[in-house]
Amino acid sequence: MQGWRYGERIAVLERDQEKGRADANAAALSSLRTDLQTISDAARRAVADASALPGRIGIISKALKNAIPLPAGCRPDDLRVRSLTDAVRAANDTAAGQPTGRSVPGAARPAATP
Image (tube, rainbow, N blue to C red; front, side, top):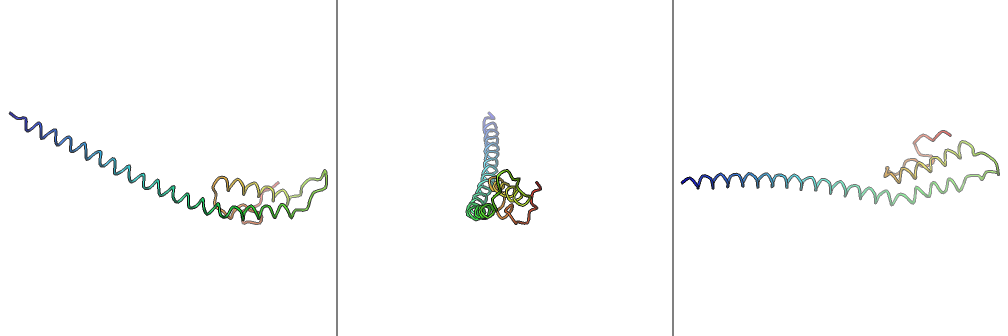
């Protein structure tokens, strides 16, 4: 007798379920787009950092190369220790993905204290 009402109710329930799935899929797609944009931005920054890395390594190498060698048994002075500490900090910052232009000898960051 009233089979058509049950059919209508089932159709409404199915429609509501499909709408819920569509909304969930739209939210997942939006999240995916945001994540892809974040990855793309990080990749662009990585390329920029990678191209600046040889220059940073060159600055560090030059500072270490131009350092006056120590006589045997001599302790390094404050400047040498700072240069070495800054070189290590620059390498660590680069490995951690920090922006380029920091932590090189003579940069604006305060030098390490021995």
